[in-house]
Image: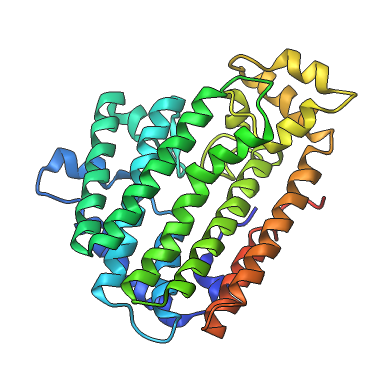
Length: 328
């Protein structure tokens, strides 16, 4: 299973150069000279990551035709810090021990420290957004509200075998897709593009975010440990029943058995049994077809962008998220 490499797929050399400038700026944005806090707030930054959200922002701003401005890069920093803060908080709620193939912050430093450090990252994100102007600050505030709403929806339906597809989309639309949409729009705002183009960027980011989450949910069923930067089947074990699982629960052959197994936390043998049951149904195939639908919509929207290079790159990026998934 290949990691998503947005820079390679976009094929925009100037964006890759911009992201090399982005990395030190990201670390500097959270370092305040307190050795203990700095160590915690840079923990996941040092672990690396796809940097997909800032890549979307920078590419949306420049179209790959000019070097990113300081404002373009700072927009990416604000987005990545919001994303990192959500990971710190998610890992506390999920009692996760691994993130990006390193020990999670909560596991290493404790829940209280992880929560406070996440709050600090969110505060830094808000401060940077405010420095970029009212529109960006408002956009990120609205996005944070959507992200929180998505998280609440996920918590509300945890371990619920009656979770609906509407519940699922509410959660992933808020937790994942809203921040992807905001990432594209922040880039548009730092570049002062037209309102029509800004709307298209947001719509593209929303569709891309849905594909991204569907991909992750499929891999939670089909991957092996070590491929995802977290244990495979973690969502199942923690009561987060994603689209493949919801489809499997409706299966006439295994749905009843799966329902009897779910509804509570799973140990490793139970987790693997549940994964096997889901994999034996059409859950993965239906989810893959759904992802293809959203990828096609993303590519269609990308083709309307004024920059043909950006449109082609964004279309390729949406399609690339499906490349290493099992055939449906």
